Image (cartoon, rainbow, N blue to C red; front, side, top):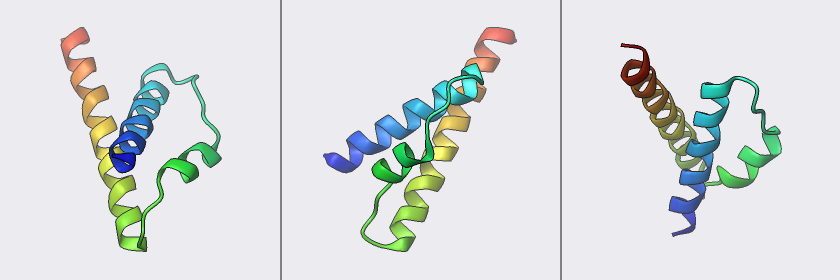
Length: 66
């Protein structure tokens, strides 16, 4: 459950940063929430969160501006 909560928080904050462009979090926030047991797990977590955030922002742009 902690992994899902961390993933949700990271994605939500990345979407807010990408959408507004002025909302900035310190890197320590992401370091705290993007923890994994292995290096591969941490890389997969960050990559999936980034792809999800970019997908959400792209979808919102298409829905609003198209």
